[in-house]
View 1: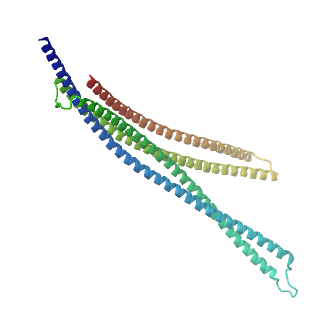
View 2 (view 1 turned 90 degrees about the vertical axis):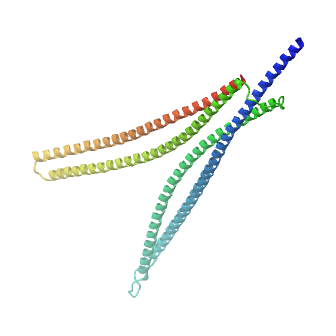
View 3 (view 1 turned 135 degrees about the horizontal axis):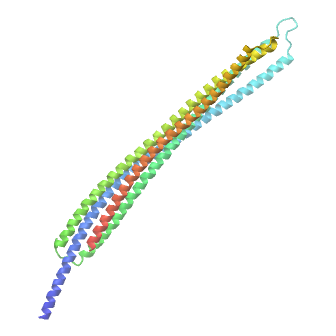
Length: 396
């Protein structure tokens, strides 16, 4: 009787262990399918990002190569033109010096007229040489003017080259950002692959003792686990969609930042134009006031000279006129000082105001981007917590 009772208990114990093993096997299969689906999604996203990154990297490298080749061609072309102009100028200078020496020799050794009274050919030679020297001089001046023009073109090309270099720098920074995103996705896929391998190993371990048994849904505990899995799977899908939306919004923020950089460059250019205009206006005002002061000083000197040359004593009208002119001169000097000070203050205030506006715009976009980055981190943290909760629940 006791032995039969023990056999029944052992049989029931074996049945319970078998039921638990079936539940664990089914849970592992579900986890494996979920992991494979997530891994497939990340792999597809990684392939898309990798293709976009490779395409953008190729375009950037082609653009960089093209800019470098264009830079080299422009530099070589202008260097060749510059050397050609310098050689031409040097050759013309040598010819002019040689002709000048020949002209001096003819002047020193040839008489003005011949014995029979006719005009000597020296005058004709002098005229020809002088005309030739004048022609060479004009040609030399033209070459110098062309050299100055080419030098200015070279300076403009250097400025364009600097702009191209800055654009290449920005493109390289964008490439680094894309590379970091690609590395992050690659790390996620690698992590999911390792997790998938763990699930497969656990599934193989559970398959061995119950290879000949049928699968089943189990008791109510398993149904609760299955409901929990479905809920977490839906939650994970929602988090993934939010994560993708956050990535898109991040891209829009980056585009907005690039627009702000362009706006910054435009503001700097406008500010420089305003400064140049203020400086020109200031110079014009200074020239006008200084010319007026010089006119007044010349007028005073003329009156003083007139009074000094005449023996008539200085009367009150001349003295009052001189006082009036001195006062007008003093007023003009004060006006010049005030205009200069006002122009400087205007340029300073305009610069500070534009920089302040740009600073607030940057603060606003950085705050917006930081808030979105915090949301992304919170979503990723929630995803990790849900994954940990699922693992703990399954282990329990």
